Image (tube, rainbow, N blue to C red; front, side):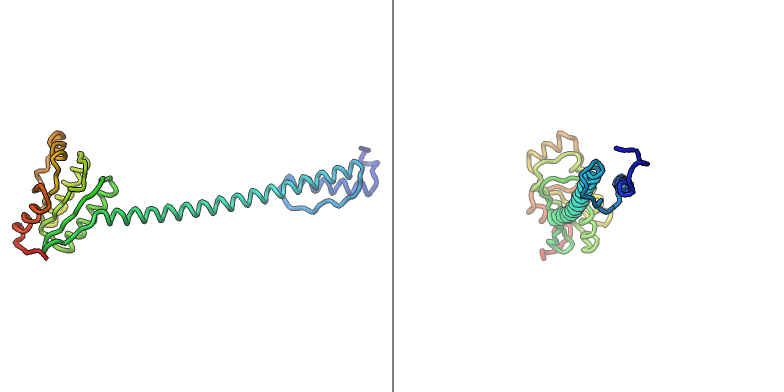
Length: 215
């Protein structure tokens, strides 16, 4: 290419336009396409700059579309996670119902595994129900619990202590023979709870404690 001083005014104008476009491209700014139908070196360079600019613009548009899509998916995942947490909380509440089976007598059937979150939910529901209903006896039915470990035992003991703080007593029923063996082998002390083998016996014991008929 000839020396800049030897270029014609038209060439200099085109070269400045090319330089301006390149600077704007590097800065990531919008610019107008270079208008030139020349077929010499400057024309080829101008067309190349135009192609590069179009490719970069398309690339930015694709990147923006991807960012928007990622944003939508993140929002959807957050909403799904929120709904899932709400559903889990609802299931936990449903899976640990507190039933008023007689005047002053509450029944809390425990079914399935007791993790920390569900144990906390159970204790919270028990305290609220025992307080609002002025329960004198709470029956914890673990017939649906297939395995007992120190964690579950501590939850049951904590439940009994909660009831005692509210002026009530606790009966533990539904202890299967294999579960009883595990309790003994682990050295778990459930002396703070009255125990019966089944729900019928627990209900009979609760009636003696409260001297009230079934509702």
